Image (cartoon, rainbow, N blue to C red; front, side, top):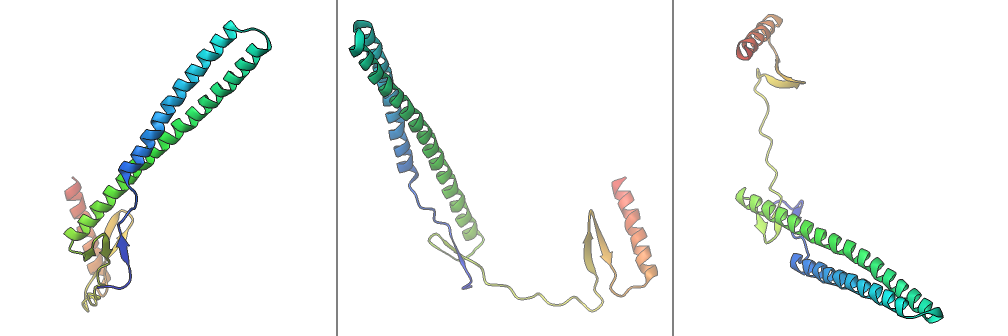
Length: 170
């Protein structure tokens, strides 16, 4: 086995526990909204029954509490959405890595738990034959470049290739 490197497909984190945290925040968010409504109702009730400085003080106190609940509700709502999205992404990445591990096993790479070992390097296949031809790619076409052929033979080959393309393409 190659000692160059390995791929560890382990992704730490418990998706279910993260969703539980987000759900707890969701319940807290809902409770904050209920508290804000109760404070608003109490503020309005107190303001309608009381007069003077006491009414103003209670109104201001309840208004501050109501605003705090609403701000906390909004932050909790955002945190809840972010944490649920994080858990979903974590789940998706864990699934991707499990697929990579299965692919490595199917391709007969050495694995050990969640570790995939790089394959051993392969040897060079050898040199081209003495009179061989190499394929050379140019944009949009495949051309055969002569190594030791005459110019005339090369031109015949190009014409034949062009005629073959016309026949194929109609």
